[in-house]
Length: 408
Image (tube, rainbow, N blue to C red; front, side, top):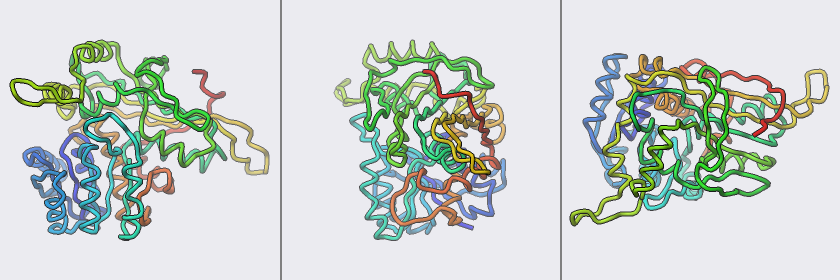
């Protein structure tokens, strides 16, 4: 029975708080804060209607460390769950250190003025959290998060080593909008327009954004074009699996999305540097995000499935009778229905597939199944209890052996 403070009031936060309320034996008291208190109030009202659980709400600027420290000390949570923007990771970590409370997030820190996705800023906090006797868990979403746990589960139960790894993120849902992003527009577009990077032979190789495209037939979705891009879990996976020869991340995008994004890039609307407009400084991408449909409003109209998983090739574990395993390839994934996610929490599956792992990671920490002093990535934890909770809380997974390594 634990008290938690959740920061942020978007779709992921809504899912996470709903799922926390559905597990009162783990989360006895839930507090929710964001810059816009009315968004917190709307989530709390939905939670009350669906579960009967009361969620306390607060308005706060997560970048104001003294105010965050005061709120944390007032509420006395065992854990702060950061579901705000990645720019706010470091201030919230600072507040947790000062207030003496554990920390969890779903995405690594990135500076506001550069689309740079690296863990080094947060890894630099390790000694401070260790000396304080506190745990910080990074990247407890789906990717990063579940994909890292999938990988380490395969390494624990199926493979001695991993030679090649491909992460495949497919959103086969359709929301009826000409152009909309299924999670925070600013973060989504920054990720997609950044140069692609993949791990190969001990180093990261950079290629132009969206330059490599492959068609893949996803179960319960069908054939989709997926594009190689960079995602932060490649960095942590390479760190904790140094034997990997190659690791890549792929995400699907429809032709309409690519067409609209190309036009927006061409006219400068995806820029993240400030410009002057009528005497005021604005950032084009932030303005674009303000006029695009909010991801949390897409749940009611989004139909179809997501299919996210990893394909790993490596030296297989030896058999039960001592026979050598040889090289094998395994595909482990989850398929999530947009309609089912909306029925349960009022949010579409992209928010659901991140919000549920945020709840599960929080449960791992407050129940002591995952523990430690310092800053940790998901790869460093025992995958089994997390995988068990995925099956029981809306994100069941499946694993199968493939005939051989991927041919793309």
